[in-house]
Image (tube, rainbow over all chains, first blue to last red):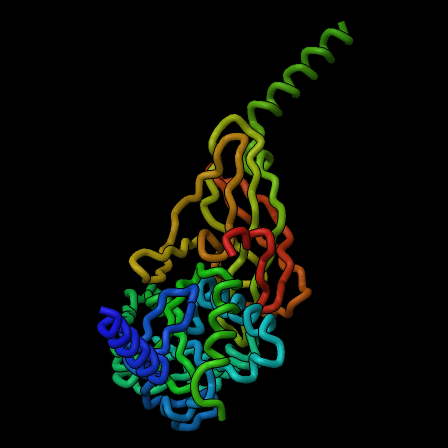
Length: 202
Length: 154
C-alpha cells in the first residue's frame, strides 16, 4: 500500500516536472480571456507604416497587441488606441518590450503614410500595418476575426465594420490572450506584465 | 388704462415667450470636445446635452463652418463586431440628459475647411426637432485623449 502511494507520488512529480518544463503549455494566471494553445502563432506578410515588407517573425522578441481597424474610423478605433496608449504609459520603460500592431481593414485608403500619421498620434509603441487585401483577409481569418465594408454614401465615403478584439501574443509569437475594447486597463497592464516576463527575450 | 394696457401686453409677451420657447432654449450643452485625428481624417465630436423642459427634445443633426459635413452617428459593438450607423434623431428625455460619448453616439465631422489643432475651439450648430439651433463651443483635443468623464467602465 505504501509502495503504491510512493509510485503515485513519483508519477505525479514527473508529470508535474514535464508540464512545468514545457514552455508551450506554461499556464499563466491571465485575467483576460486565455487563448494559449487555442489560436495560431503570429504570422502575416504585410507592409509596415514605413513602407517595409514585414512578417510576424519581425516582431518576435516583443509582446504584441494586435488590433484591427481603419483610419477613417473616428470613434471606436481612436478610443481603443487611446486606452492602449494609457496602458503602455502605465508599463513605463517596460513598454519598449511591447508593440501595438494596428492592422488596417481598409487598405484601399490606408497607405503606409496615412497609417504612420495615424498611429503616431496615439503611441510611440504603435506600428500601422497595411497591405494586400487578401493578405489582410488571411490574417483576419487566422484569428477568426472579420470585417465588412459597408455601402458607400453619395460622396463615396464608407465605413468598415470590424472585429473589436485585441489579441495579445507573447515574445515568441504565441497567441495568449484576447481582450475586448471594454477590458479594464488594470487587467491589460496585469497580463502584459506576465507576458513581458514570459518567453525568449531578445 | 395705460397701466392696464401695459399689463396685458406684458402678460401676453410672457406667455408667448413660454409657449414659443424653442427646443434649443431648453437644451444646455456641456463638455463639448472633438478628438482631432491627423490629416483630413474624420473626427468624432462629443457633448452632454441636458433638457430642462417637460418634453422630449430630439437632436437631429449639426453643422459647422469648420467642417464640410457633420453627421449624427452611433457606434455599437455586438457579437464582437464594431459598427457605425447613421442616426436620424437622438432623443433627449424630459428633465434628463443625452450623452454623446466615445463608443456611443457622436457627431462625425468630415472634411475640415482648415486644419484643426488640439487646443482650438470649434463652433458647432446643433439642430433640434423643431428646427431651432444652438451654437456650442467644442474644444479640440489630441487623438489619444482618454475622456475621464466617460471612462467609468474602465
